[in-house]
Image (tube, rainbow, N blue to C red):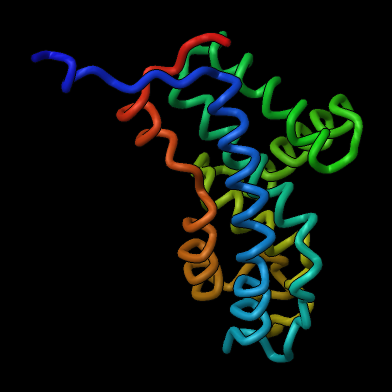
Length: 181
């Protein structure tokens, strides 16, 4: 009778597979819409012309942010093991060295923290990461361009878009018992 209250079991390896596959698919299929939203934002003086195929930097921002968020939902040992599995699987999928990928993502996380300072909100850091990695400052009105900061109206719109790429770690924790393996 109490089995209906048990959480489903998922291994760390299965979770890493799910994260990598779903994130890659979501970014590959969704970045065209992101590029279109950025290119057509009325806050820009001229169209940035972000290419729908230019999603590499976006993917790194999404992964860096999601891995940072994962650390808030799992114990420190478990999140490290899951992250290591994610790095290996992602490196294989992208055809890159796992250590290079791990270092690149760590650099993105550190840089996103700096451009988002003093806020510690990871979603905002992801949005600012996209803003700066795609060099969108040059398309803004003089006031924001001279301050080298995103127009808050654009940033709010971008936050709403980026939210669609945030992995639902709380839901995973609620629905699954993540076990080693």
